Image 1 (cartoon, chains in turn cyan, brown):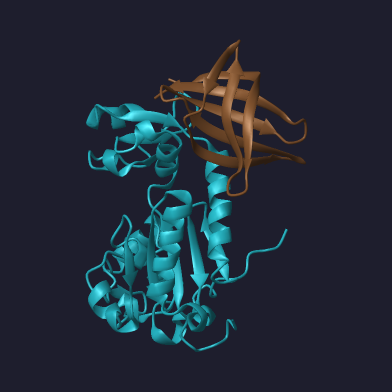
Image 2: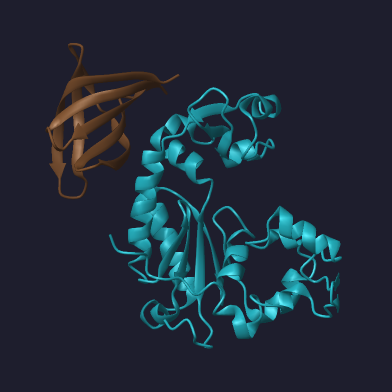
Length: 245
Length: 82
């Protein structure tokens, strides 16, 4: 897939749901349906991932264990085992590569897939996403949320919209409505520092135009690279084949 | 509460075309444990060595068994109540 192509791509972002916690609930069936928090091994650890049952009580990643226990009395703390998550991630990659060689592993539980050239083989983006979700559930007993969009930023936004077990497609025509009131921090790549800088310009949502050093930008944030139609396909490059060992 | 063990054990295994290795029972400290179900399996590489890990249950407890492919030996790594 040429990174210089102006042709619209079809990009999937696959995000495993409560990954570490879900794996631990597969390992130990007694944990299924219970509020669990996967933590590090040492005494002063924090929550790495919480199960959806624990999240319902407000338990979040980054909380200390005492903080988490204070808001979820029945919380079960499970020490994480990264060898399990690494192996599961490796097996997930093998599943993804059955549908496209253009897979970019974003993290242990996230990946971007460029399925543009796979559509003719496997059908629509929705069909491929549904097939991937089905295989992940059948072979691994885990659930994933998938976003489908013309570029990586939008696909990652989509995968987060209907978690868990979500499947969301974002078309370019959806951008104005979807992003108008969306806080800028919800976009991948906009961290606290950039959020603060944008806020100083008066931009707090993707629909905000604000006023920069050089005057009013005049265009909503979503109309700028890398979200717009002309540049979306080249945003950070489409997913690439991972380096071979 | 997970109890770390790390002791060698004897394991009865079925080589299944669908699942490669399926431990069926193990003997630890002179007692035989029947494996009701393998709940999870994963592989770990340590340099050249390849280890197969299995989380198994006898219905009462959860056990982590490890198979070292370089020495063809099994260990019981940990036990926890279910």
